[in-house]
Image (cartoon, rainbow, N blue to C red; front, side, top):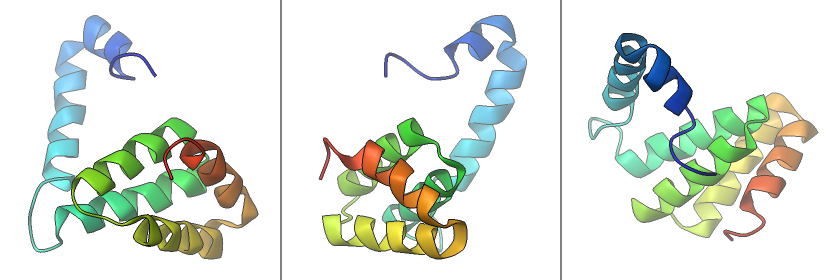
Length: 99
C-alpha cells in the first residue's frame, strides 16, 4: 500500500480529510483503553468488513504498541464470532506476510 489510503480525499477535499483524521485521532489515542487494545478492536472490525489493507496496517500498529501475535489471532477469533468466516479470510490475506 503506497501512501495514505485517503490521499485522494486529502487532495480533493482537505477540510473533509481533516475531519476524518480528527475522528481517527480521537478514537486511536491513549485513554482508558490502552492503545494496543484499540488497534486490536479496530483490526477485528476491519476484518469483519473485509478491509484487508486495514487489517494489515492495524496489525502492524498493534504490534508496535505491544500486542503479541497471539493477541492478534484472538482478535481474529472475535471477528469470526461476530462476522463469520469471511472475516477470517480477510484477516488471513492481511496477516500472511506479518505473522
